[in-house]
Length: 307
Image (cartoon, rainbow, N blue to C red; front, top):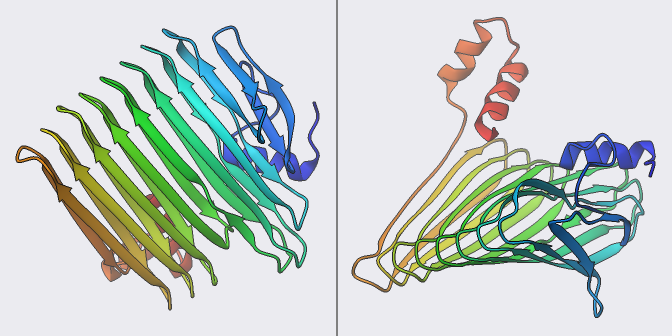
């Protein structure tokens, strides 16, 4: 399958694809599946009652990578998809997702992804999701992912959730349940500018003894943009959890960080820290002394901060 220049650029930006990848893949373009391949160990099965798929990883599968990006290039389109990811016992795989929107119209373009992850005992998943918007039109680029995660005994998931640039409105809702000796690490990196608005709502329930979870957020708000970050850790057993929010605020932007800890067991150990501040003057001076302009120094600091 060949992609046009806009499609190819979006796929490169959100999923680092230069063409059709090897192995299991599902590429959705403008509300319809454009390319779908399974592999011997990973089956991608279309849902019968609604748009989306069930992705099933066979027990014991090791080292495979699945690409499931979504792109929108038709202005005025509202796309909703329901995807279920089932990671078999003792499997260890990577899923590369993400959504890119190109909108050059006055009409809004929107993608709502409803995702469910089910990790069987002792499985391991690395999940990468990048969101990006572009286009010269006045219509908004809107992304609203809703994610639920079920982590069975001894299973592990590392989630990297990134909003690169260009997304006008986003509400990200994530709910996680962790069983005995399960582990979740969720990393969020977010950049907003202009009049953009972004919200992230995370609930992490550590239900089983020996379970642990981390929510790590780094964000930069520029110009008149607004961000809201809410993260709740609920410890229901002998467990450990940590929430960390670190943000750079610039220009006339607004940031709210609201961490919450709820301990329902005397042996739960839950911690949080949050910091919001501007770029330190000494950082700028140091970089400018090396020959960078002020804007180049600011861009370098932001790029390093969000890496």
